[in-house]
Length: 234
Image 1 (cartoon, helix red, strand yellow):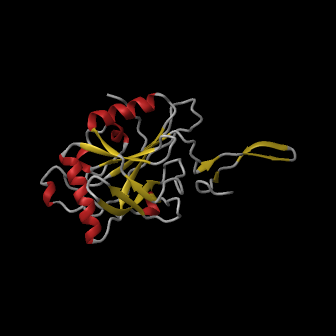
Image 2: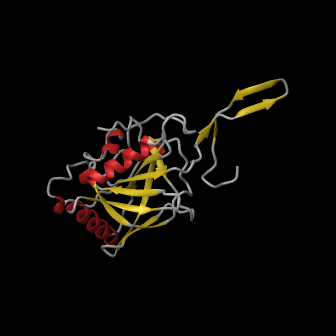
Image 3: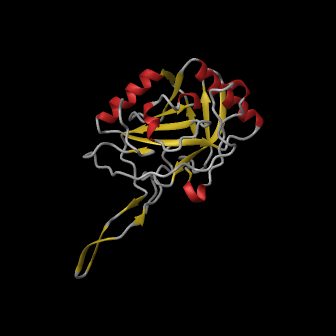
């Protein structure tokens, strides 16, 4: 099987102008974890309320809000959600994704595993894991539940194109978390949540960098400073 490493945010291979990263445990979950495979019909919608202060934060869309609307054309349903990113992820995704996301098809588990493996072997792509959270409101939860139950019943992964350069999102619902190979790198994986796999070959801004500071009589002094949000002017 393909080894995707131990990071929840997978950068390109060495030599692709990217950096490695560390990892941390995912945020505390609410409600408590339980096995999705047991009577999916009776389970509540997988929803999390992450402790953003300790473990990470919600990303913002290109429109500057934390809310994303995902439309599943085949089912004619939409639901709103937020996307949670781990604190240890080195990439800055604020302003990277559009707020309105529409599916463009679905892919089998086998095809998805091969597709991700081939892309990552090329060393030109970055893989990032996000987590859907804050799916609230009865109508919203009903639409979301209809989506994930339908796609789990036909063993398919939802694919959402983002840009013409090939950037895509894939929604990995709870049933498939154990058999999607690129999810094996996520420590303490929540079995009741849907994850977002972001695949892009864009050169993403780093959340932290070590620039070279040059002053009179001093050179090559490293100083770790935060990076501005994606697309922002420092």
